[in-house]
Amino acid sequence: MKKNINIGLLGLGTVGSGVFKILNKRKGALKRLVEADLAIKKVAIKDMRELKDRNLVKIDKKLVTTNAMEIIKDPDIDIIVEVIGGREPARGFIKEAIKTGKHVVTANKEVLANFGEELFGLADSKGVDLYFEASVGGGIPIIAPLKRGLVANKISQVKGIVNGTTNYVLTRMYEDGCSFKTALKEAQREGFAERDASQDVEGNDAAAKIAILASIAFNARVTAKDVYKEGIGRVLPQDIIYADEMGYVIKLLALAREDKDGLDVRVHPAMIPLEHPLAGVDGVYNAIFVEGDSVGEVMFFGKGAGSLPAASAVVSDIVEVARNIQYERCGKIGCTCFEEKPVKKMDDIITSYYVLIQAADKSGVLAKISKAFGDAGVSLASVIQKRTWKDKAELVFETHPVKEHNLREAQKRIVKLDVVDSILNIIRVET
Ligand SMILES: NC(=O)c1ccc[n+]([C@@H]2O[C@H](COP(=O)([O-])OP(=O)(O)OC[C@H]3O[C@@H](n4cnc5c(N)ncnc54)[C@H](OP(=O)(O)O)[C@@H]3O)[C@@H](O)[C@H]2O)c1
Image 1 (cartoon, rainbow, N blue to C red):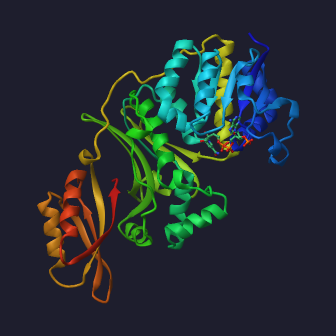
Image 2 (image 1 turned 90 degrees about the vertical axis):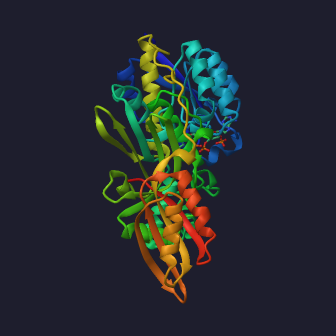
Image 3 (image 1 turned 135 degrees about the vertical axis):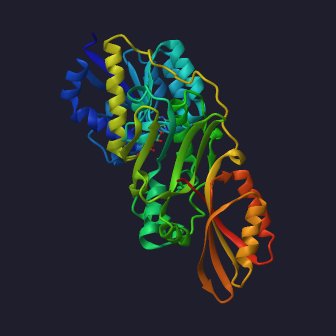
């Protein structure tokens, strides 16, 4: 057994500084758990000039370098922790580390959702560990539960709220009735959204996360580009009000499901019933809901981001890898994507829809629109006339479950009707 397990930390930003703090704070307890000292031997950052400005624990300047490769090549280092983020150079650093025989812990969803196959293949061939708990749930454990605690189950679906920024924005829109733009500005002011929040609001962050979850849950490789995505930018204040009146709440839902035709993997705003456990997940909180054939329904809830929550997952991975090193069992549970499964086209998915239409406020309009739905093979569950002003009305239609293809056909017919001004929004309803 080793007396010291040395860590090379690539990145000392939000997550890296949290890792540094936890490893210091929990030093004694972690030593007992792994029967060795877990010590950060070197830290790589991008810009030395900013070292003094960091909101950080005290750090010995001698530990810090701007040359990540120097750390990766250091023969005394056992585990490389990559918390730089983004595609490159992070992916290159992870590859080099694995090639040099180092175990890797990363929080990088972007790299894993796009280059997972390459990296896990390499790790398998080198017999090293590649752990990534923080990449999906931040502080919420979900990778280990799917890979271990739920492995007895055939998983039928994984769905969740996996992006805190968009959940905060939608929650503020619900609470205040404000617009998307106003809620986003507030989130940026409060530090819950980055200045450039496009990765979050357009659904890219959630798409990378659900690609990773789908790959593990269904034992088949799903990459970020396989995931259909729509952001929250088109959600209107009245959608939120009408959803509430209909017994739903709007969330940015990341969803992965399997049926006999393949995988259904997507990210988009969705109406979910107020009584569903995910409906009560508000603000920056995240939750992931899993359905397995033996366990039934389970939900994981907590902070999906933040320095210490994300670092909690990274340090837990470090401890797991350190234990593997001590018991010489590294690289034993590698990639579990041993099947090939098609990802369904959006035209083929089946769900219900909320359709908000602005039309003329006169008799016969409802009949014309209902006929257009019917002609496209879409059956309606409910029709409600909402606001009216002057000679205009807002009409809300909820469909029964139907193929997306039929809904799009109905959409084409409806926009051509002379009584219809526009379709203001279409939102999927996940009952
Ligand atoms: N933030 C969260 O709450 C959270 C939660 C879960 C997962 N994650 C993931 O964790 C990763 C890190 O996120 P973060 O929020 O901690 O990012 P961050 O605050 O921007 O920190 C990035 C760190 O990487 C360093 N860096 C950048 N390029 C480098 C290079 N070429 N060589 C060495 N160091 C370099 C930066 O150095 P400088 O300090 O000199 O700029 C900085 O210390 C990302 O993959 C992210 O998706 C984050």
